[in-house]
Image (cartoon, rainbow, N blue to C red; front, top):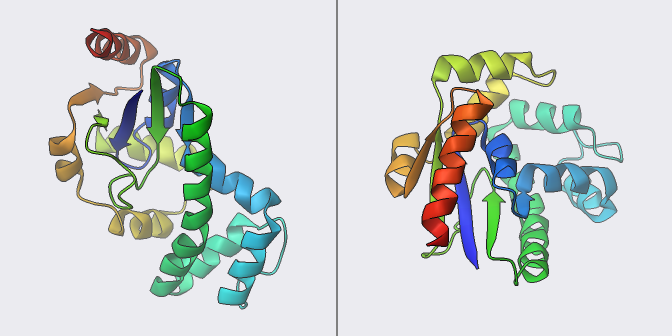
Length: 190
């Protein structure tokens, strides 16, 4: 099995590009959203760790945002609690797809949380900062202070770029991205 790890800045188009590969994708952000909606155990742990902020189930993302913005250590507490469950989901995904030729890992903190393996193919999604900010500001849940907090826990983009075997320039047009993805798939299937 070839494992592809998608790296890049917040809002660079990692999830969009992951889907273009046409392979099974593990999307960590979607898994976290599901956990917030359906996992009572996560709610109980978060409520216990952050009783001032987390009061409702399904977990309200605004409550999570308030907790993160009010205290630097709250983000670490949330990541610690949620990360264990995301790892279990990843393990299940890998077992379920063990016979697939290629799988894609769309995990924002792939390198930071040491979820990658030495043989993984890393692809860096390179987008202009100005294009990213335009896209992010269109999101209904965009919050600049929250964005900065998440940026602070990530490894530098230049480091991720150097670690990558491939770079996809994302100018947010489907045609150019699709061409890059197809070229990468051809090289991997040789």
